[in-house]
Image (tube, rainbow, N blue to C red):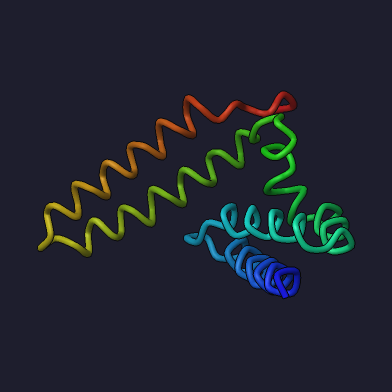
Length: 123
């Protein structure tokens, strides 16, 4: 039962990650990472297929293997996060405390991706 739930979670996450990769404002990274973890714990066959997919190679491979993220991937993530949080801040004009929290979350993302995520060696 647990294996079937993990396979289902992996497939749903993979679908959401693939859709998010096509839509500029949606981050695909967390969904693909969840798919990677779910497939790894449930089905070696699905994990092998996922690891050989272009979606994995373009979005997760460098991060998972410890090589870091390419400059283009880091910029894509930072732009997506900035746009999403920026739109949210604009729409929440009447809730200044929420805007402050969103600004702090944005700042945390920027610090993380600029200084803590190591750049890929083949940039």
